[in-house]
Image (cartoon, rainbow, N blue to C red; front, side, top):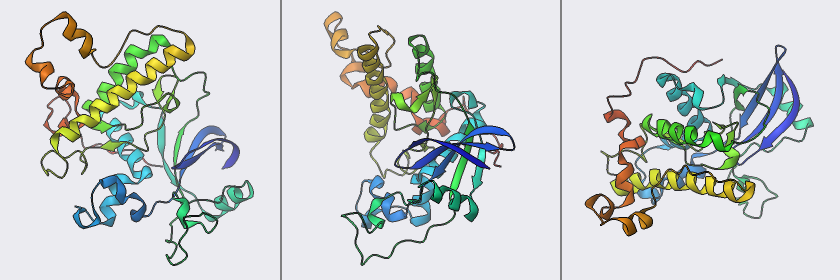
Length: 286
């Protein structure tokens, strides 16, 4: 494998353009997260955490998040929603040495584990990390995040993602490439402790509101695009409730809250939906 050039870096990973067996790919290499780094995502006190360390990694580790999301897209036959992912690979020590020569040495997701960070606590032992995990993705030349003509389809595809039991959790322009989802490392895929309506660990209204917030982020992204690019894109995910109230008398649907209007496309309803039957097909790993 030849490392050609860096494509980007985020809080979860490094992305490099690589050549494998003569073909170009985008290799997304994930940083290591200790369960103690992720426990805050449960939004509760340590005493009330409903799962053990292994489950915390399964539910919240960025590598696992992206694998579970791609696995669900494979099950649903909707791999077209995101940039193609061919599987995962484990980097060996020789790969790490090559990356170290290129200046890539920080493999912990939280900077607190590094002595040069102000928040470093020398009394805390640095957790032992395993080998570097990576996803092999299609290499796509970024021409644009999306075009105005793509927005109605993007709206339908975000709804398809939700109906498939996936909450993206990071809707923004940079996470699209040529109108497809690029990054799924923040996503939660059903079954998930934070989306479980039966366990009552999180209130039902809070779970529904997460989806509403995602639609609001989608609209905010489109509004920002309109402002920067001086385009008028009229497709929006959420209705303008204030404007509707001026046109007609309030009815029960809107008095009950805007979230209720979108409850039919809730990731938390995935198991209850007859439209998506989970197949016994697995995501194909390299």
